[in-house]
Length: 78
Image 1 (cartoon, rainbow, N blue to C red):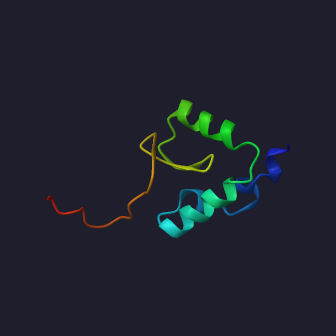
Image 2 (spheres, one colour; image 1 turned 30 degrees about the vertical axis):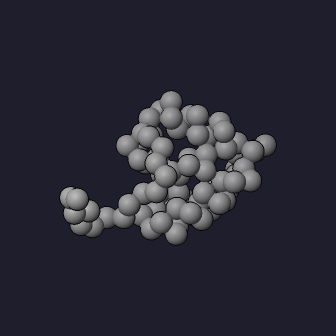
Image 3 (tube, rainbow, N blue to C red; image 1 turned 90 degrees about the vertical axis):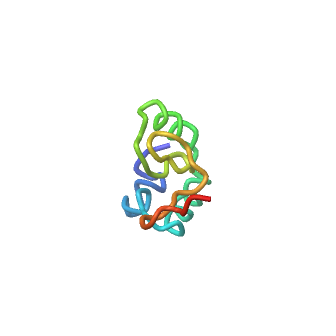
């Protein structure tokens, strides 16, 4: 497969590094059908990518997270 036809190459690059949860969910959905998804995620983990959607997963500080919290006030301590 040609890398120029993957969703991340044919869609606005800002989507893959968005702040809004809905944008990140869309990026993850677009990754779903990509045949390079596994290689993309493995490469991002090896490079310790600081953030973004890679291989259909959200990375933050080089680690996979289930959900990226938006900017703003931190949660109150329990």
